[in-house]
Length: 259
Image (cartoon, helix red, strand yellow):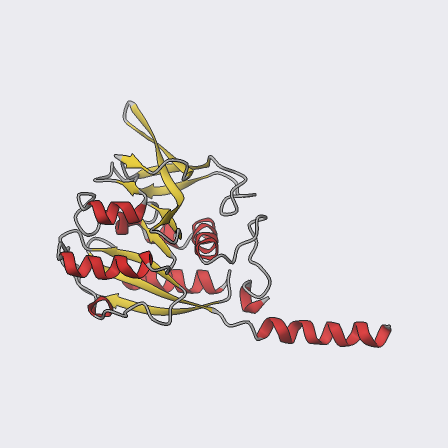
């Protein structure tokens, strides 16, 4: 029995190491953010929290009309397990281009949408993009601290996480949100008004119920590099891919280093 136990103990790490990492496409670039830094913060933070391989689609352009070469191909999503949309391209309104992006997710590729992805492709005025996001937002308030509150503490993405207050950040408005998906709210005091808005949500998209996680937080480098922010993004990524347990921990083989 002792020999069997020793053999099993030796085989277990080998089995974990053989688990292929989730292949993640991280799309960054466009207006208004330090994407050159933030894409590196995201890659390092996600690799420290999950068994992932990050492939970058980065456009250094600061224009609101920045396009991404990867999206020009019909099968642009081939070979990826999850796509993180972190682009900021409000003035791209090419319907065929946007439809090509959406088709991949309708056909089953999970997604994580961060910050200005919500204000891309028409700033909340493109109903197709809004349907995919699960929340319609058209603008934001001043850069001030935001209290991050977990309103669904039993959801796998948020279970066990504690509220915190960010440094200067943008709180996005809410025009409309899909029912039953809100899991995080942001509270921000500005002058004589306190805003309390949905800031994070977990939803599904298309006939196959593709999982999509959205988080409007993440304008400044201080936030994107914050361990608590990276915990959220990592959990949202794993949840979207079906690799997050109900306890908020990666399923076997999808923790850091394949654990």
